[in-house]
Length: 113
Length: 171
Image (cartoon, rainbow over all chains, first blue to last red; front, side, top):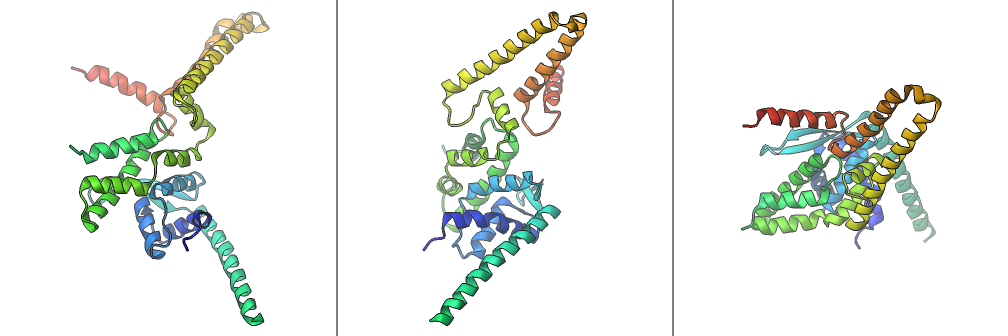
């Protein structure tokens, strides 16, 4: 069963912030990392990542700067800002809360059986 | 003959035509496409042409991308598009032209009304200088909107500077 689009959309921001928390990165690399981490389960329409990155930049969560690729091409890199780290902490809290609730309900159902 | 560079440029321009930060967005999308094409050519042994078409398929439909980017548009960005004649989606070109003409007429009418009011008000004594200041207050934002390419404050002036520089360096 493929993952719902709503879930993929909702998880985009915390995933991007988490990846950038490990170090500066660029759009294509972020997409590849998500693909690797999910074993291909989470597949973003590649181009949709960039509007999200620009939105995060406008919100002040990430900061962009231009560098060069290995072949000398212009490449836009993103780094996590302090506000982005705070937002990531908040998002992690929320996701852990949901995960904990689901785990508890799963445990509760197992007991009743 | 298939020209990869040209095809990538055309695709990226079609996604970001007339938008704010156009050049930066095009460069970013180009880098993405080149990365994907290099991967496809290396890992799946495709030709550049095949890899290009597969890469833009993965990247997404140009209209979908435009719509996604337009969600980021601020009021300023929308005004910028109106000033450049590229209007809110999904209006067609006829509607866009009508809206641009209407916008221009509204500006012109308001200038005439303001001019008349100044001449017949207590400010008539100062009318010459007040009128000049008001004209500047109208023209500068319009010029700024119509020439602005990036989100920087001095782009309109750098465009003038560049044009003058080109004039003196010609021949």
